[in-house]
Image (cartoon, rainbow, N blue to C red; front, side, top):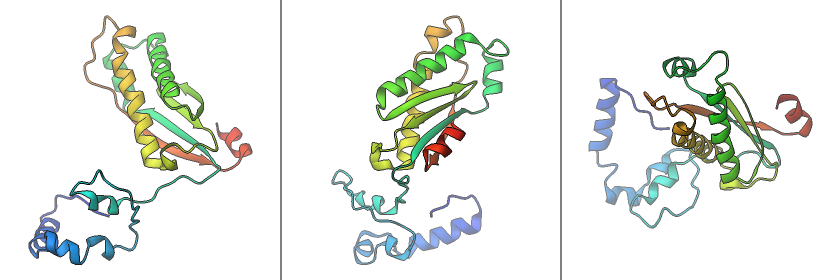
Length: 190
């Protein structure tokens, strides 16, 4: 794992590590850094034949369990403040709910492996079919693309629902993946 920090001692260690020539091209060919890390998975995928192809060796294998329900849960970050600054009606602004549904329908249209999507307030969940093979079931790839799609459509369609209100700043959503291994567990938690 590579960590970025601001402590001077860590920067000095990183600088001295860099200055040893460990990252020089000739050194990299003889003894790649990923050989030193036992928890790194080399995926073997090509990176468009570029000189940065070695970066793929640092990716972790985060595939979701096979034959389990994959649920992507989205949540608006600091949405209480966002809704207050954009003048949402309390307790639920009809325009905001319709905008969330529009963004969610775009996710359903773009990702055909989603069986159902449902939302409440500033949260939305998308349940993927048990046999979905989207992005080879790579969790980070699934969640980042779904969150990106949802957020992009939320911002893009904002003027349709809030014609009289300009965006002061763009909303952000976080996302996580939850796996349900059986139908019974999935029904109890969805």
